[in-house]
Length: 245
Image 1 (tube, rainbow, N blue to C red):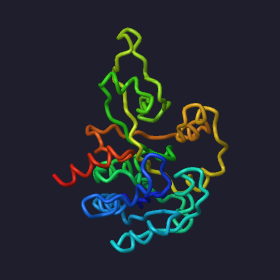
Image 2 (image 1 turned 180 degrees about the vertical axis):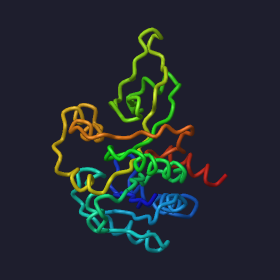
Image 3 (image 1 turned 135 degrees about the horizontal axis):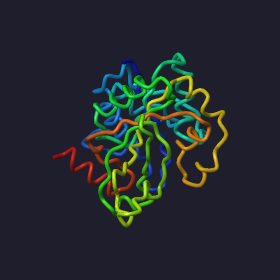
């Protein structure tokens, strides 16, 4: 199994400005993420950014960074540009690690890449874990998904799916989506040319564009939950304590 990790990073964030450069235990968060990703089986780890400050921070700590355009509408579009800059073959695997996951498990990165490698009929792979908390099941900020018997995604939603009719809506074999993706580089090159889908606009979930256009996404069901990500100042304080302690 051979793959490249690409970490999209931009400074613009409404809830936590300059998030990639936030200090966590003496290191910028983007460097923490890259160091965790480097513990996986990835051949290389690359940060794709539109901010010179992020590229400089990476260079100081020995992390490879690529400068990309500032007008990309999504992280996947930024990844597509990175694939071109890196000159990856169409059959190469690329794992997209989010730049706000300083506690990402290297084994989860490997599992996502392995899932893509094991399902050649899929252009992407992603990760999910069992969801048992009714409050999270009902929370629209928690993305759920359902799969077919082969472990391929049928649908992603902010709504509570699958709805357990006889259990008064309580979660039953529900899955929480983890925002970790593996792609075939050739599909990443095609992705920016795909029309935005109505379902994607309704749910505000980019991965629905893939399903809308008839492509398949393989799903790895993880026994472990991912470490906490960083979206808010409160998240940042929590992660700082975890790193410190």
